[in-house]
Image (cartoon, rainbow, N blue to C red; front, side):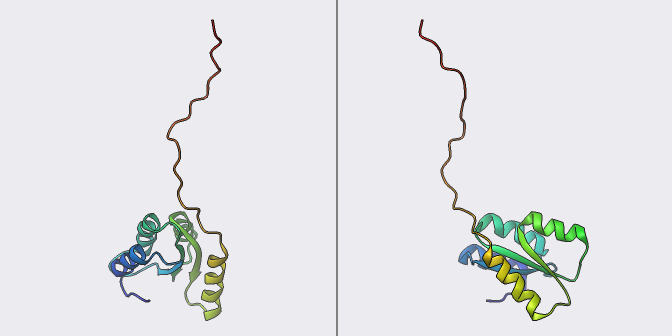
Length: 113
C-alpha cells in the first residue's frame, strides 16, 4: 500500500500495524520524523526505514532516535532500498509489552524481637 501524505499513512500504520514502513522525510502535510514518532507509539512492532534527500548527520541521528532502523539518501538505487528493507526485517521484533510491577522495594528483612 502506498500513501502520498503523512496523515493517511499514519492512520494506515495505526490500523494495519505493518511489519515495515518506508517513510519519506518530507511528506508535505506532515514531517516524516513526526510520522515515525507517532506511528512507533501506535505500532511498536513496526520497523521504519526513512528515505530523504538530506544526508546531514543530525537528520540521520534524529530519525534513528525517533525509531527508524535505517536511513536511505536520495538519489538511490533500487538495491539501496531492498537492502534497507532486508536489514530492517532481519532485526528482532520488539517484545510485546508485559505487565510489570510499578514499584519494587528492596530492604533488609526485619528481625523478630
